[in-house]
Amino acid sequence: MGTPDFAVEALRCLVEGGYNVVGVITMPDKPAGRGHKIQYSPVKQYALEHQLPLLQPEKLKEESFIEALRAWKADLQIVVAFRMLPEIVWAMPRFGTFNLHASLLPQYRGAAPINWAVINGETETGITTFFLKHEIDTGEVIQQVAIPIADTDDVGIVHDKLMVLGGKLVIETVDAILNGTVKSIPQEEMITEELHPAPKIFKETCRIDWHKPLKQIYDFVRGLSPYPAAWTELQKPDGSVEMLKVYQTAKIPDAHQLPSGTLRTDSKTYLHVAVEGGFISILSLQLSGKKRLKIDELLRGYKITDEFCVK
Image 1 (cartoon, rainbow, N blue to C red):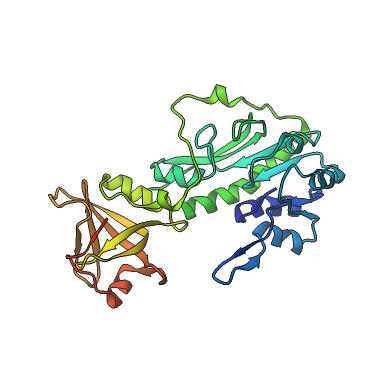
Image 2 (image 1 turned 180 degrees about the vertical axis):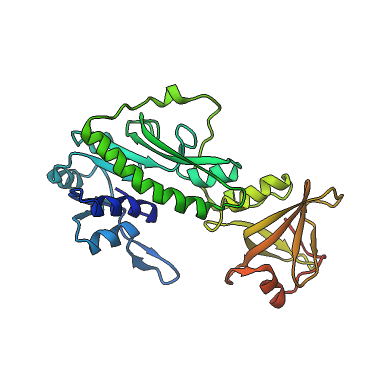
């Protein structure tokens, strides 16, 4: 059960590993893009290409879906980047249902674990497989793999690393369950420090607060890059504003006295934003309705001076 690319890797490993995948469940088709054309999810595309039985239920408790799922007679269900399942679904197989989660549980329970780990400046994250139970992301842990987060990693880089490791961990977890060698651990026994949540990210979540310290802003931008992207408002000298997405920055420590949000630029090659503890150098950005550009590319066609500011 899954929808995005992150789930495809696990499905691919199962198929190529010769496991008997009796069916695939993914979200219903939805219109996307400017033309609102129906686009298949990555998981659906893979299932169709490999002629795998497919279900796309609107509601996970509807009787027709439950009957179709029961007819597959699956021994084990695997969930990767899907949605919360009702007990009638997750308790159906004889070996139960396990989930692949992109954090080192019990840390970063929720919908956006990779984003929040990077936003919070963590130096380590990982992936976890765990058995499903009633409360979301709280079931007993089966296996975990940790990886470092470099100071230059954005969420896209960490996502791709975890995606590849996740496929391998799903296979290891399936084998352990089938071989009867699983020794799962209650998450309550693993809690050694304050837990950080990973709630769903909305547009307003992504707005940059230029009054925060240098490192926090730097981590915030890379924790939302390349998607959904941090944003700010560029205020022009005449008082009008334009939305700006920021994808890549650099830290410039400095003991200045400028108000937060003040811009410093040569209008050709660099754009620096004054913040607490120094300057954020904007390296890659996107004006509303335009394509993503490096800062020197944008400044060649869009005039920004020190009279502008961000807020």
